[in-house]
Amino acid sequence: MRISFRVISLLTPLLAAATSHADTIILKDGTFVEGEITLQTSRTVRVSTRFGERTYRRSNIEEIIESVNSLDPDAVNKFAELSAPVKAVLNARAEYDLGRHDPRRYERALARLEPFRDYEDSRAIRIHIDWLIIEINERLGRWETVRQLLENKRSNGTPQERMRAKAHLDLFDANPDYDLRYVGEKHARNFIKGEELRNRARQPDALRDYDIMRIALEETCEQLLVEDQLSVKALADKLDPEATYEACKTLPRIGDVGKYLPYIEDLKRAEATLAKAQAILDDYGGAFELDIVRTEVNHLLPILDRLQEEASAASPETYNPPFDRRTGRLTKDGREQWRQRCDEFLTTAEPVTRLIDYMVDRVNHYPQALRDLRKMLLDSRERFKETVRAVRKARSRTHV
Image (cartoon, rainbow, N blue to C red; front, side, top):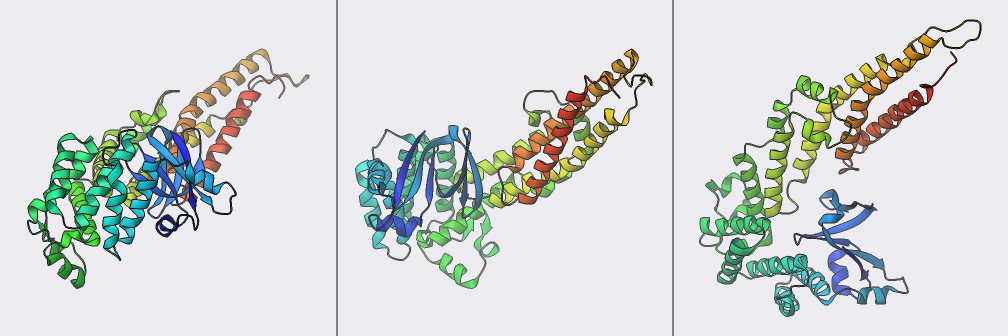
């Protein structure tokens, strides 16, 4: 993974107009994520986007392009460090965004990408170039070219690209005049809100319109979720507190907690379907994804409380072992009983620690949206771990 820098200044006015001091993360699947990087660790990068907080594993990141203040004396040099294909993509993307107000920008965007149509040094950059070319040609209404490019992706692209290409081609097949009357078998009047939008959608070549195509792809994603019978309520209805409690009581000391939870297959199916939808529209489903995490954590909270209460009941602090009144020292039997009580607590505490770590990891992906819940879990974890440390230290005590 490489880290480079983007200068936002009068030196790059076109880029500045489109990005407004945004950092960019390039994923290996070709997705460009723009926003503000708020945290970087050895394993993950967190970025605040207009669709909310997102956390990405470094293993899934191709390149990070950090914005640089134009007052930085090295700004020009840092901008020069960007590779020519990255510069072309960023500037073409800016032209594309401005094309909604000035269609001439679309041709300029294509011209910027033309030298890199056969670029092979970075798969992620190549994927993004290909899809930007497809989207620009859609905005220009060059449907024959678009179909050829999409058919190639459906045959030779990555699994995510094949799914994305199929979604576009299915829309074209259902609407041969490239208007928007149907998504699947559902009529547009049932999902397009507002008379003005419905009238725009009825016009031939309406799918040239960015907003109309966006509505069509969002409805495609919605139908995908319905087809897989996926909803947050459906997931919540399947959650069995007693089964989860029994599973959590016997969590192993190492390994992925998630795979031992009884609902994990349902959760994986939900996340897999969401991944399909996000392959079609990469910023789709943020709220749905958040609701899944919130539903799971709210299911686990009473189970965590129950386990903590059981651990507290086994705390050695509530136990008075036999001791010698003359010396104030524990008797031999008292020391043995004290250690057994400490060991009983530590055994009972182990699944609590494992479960709370799992829950913190889940909410860490949404540090702002789940801020209060995250703080509560972090505070609870610190208090409980401090108790565990104290018991381990006190296990060897000899005085009452």
